[in-house]
Image (cartoon, rainbow, N blue to C red; front, side, top):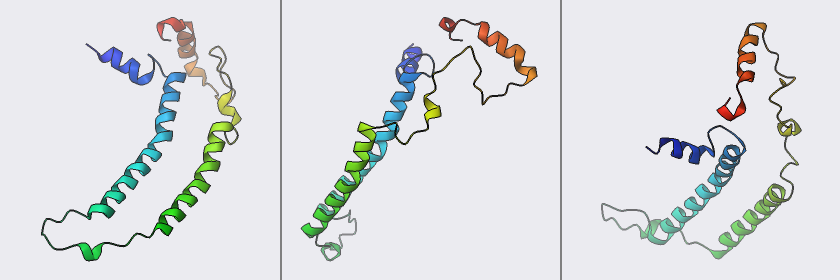
Length: 136
């Protein structure tokens, strides 16, 4: 049975922790670039070969001549937008973030923005009595 191993590999451990968040952040960051790359490959193939033509009607009249100026202009525009974004993400990733997200966790103290209700106090006491090694 590989269920437990598979879950720990996908989540980075038996609980949601830093490896899990890092992995999902990386996936969500890379996914738009992967989609853009596949779109570029798709458009290139459509430009080179034309679309699928099951009726056999000549489709050469539908092809648009592709002037190198447009490719150069698009590449320069992409570079001018991507370089500042990549510089921001790689050199100062916390610059635009919310500093509250980086408060170190303290499992023995309830965060100030959470106001526990009196009828949950027994549950808090039970949960805090479970050692962290047991997954509590």
